[in-house]
Length: 121
Length: 146
Image 1 (cartoon, chains in turn blue, cyan):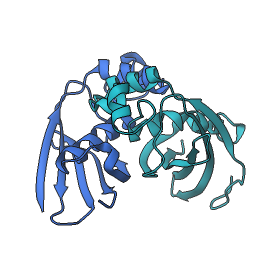
Image 2: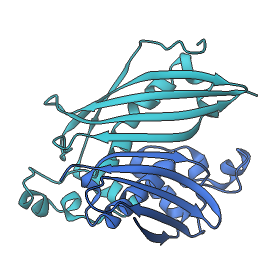
Image 3: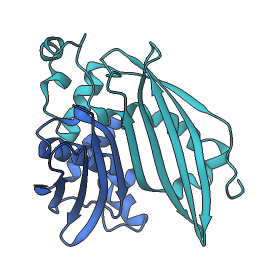
């Protein structure tokens, strides 16, 4: 096993761009006041945006791309905040293993965990 | 809906994929593979046009989920739903190409209650206009009773 880590600092602009591109226009992702009214500290990134970044991290760790992923399963464990570093760790299987576990955190706060399965080569 | 009992109903929508919708999505999530954005690269890779990244499934299947959640059966609790988990499974031969129309059918997999929490598992099945499956999704949401 080997671990590959990558980081990204999401921005509120990412959430707004994702809302426009995806059709998921829940204002908790784009409007800070609406997010606070819903009990959140500020607007948060979409879970599906985070999942897309997880897919990319799995692809990079596997030296392939997202098209090589057969199955991706994610548990959203916390919200992803803008302007905080998001660290994604992918545990690479050695040899022919097709399952790759991953997690994402902001600081010490785990925000997502999951597993990806790659297509048979 | 009582615990463990799920409706057999289905909610179906069509989504026309365009070069622009793929390009906007790639820009939003930072997908840089040229087969998603450059028709010449996609054609060189054997596709008729640019293809969508796998996670674009979250876009073309969302309208069916939204249609289901707008149904009176779920409309009361939908605003309280937290997206707790997501799984997608893709068909290796089911690439989504620009100008495809993807038909997605949403259904209820299970509804379970544990103390003050209700867990909903929704399912989506998406197919191209030629009938080939592109992806399946399982969407887990949680509602905490007030």
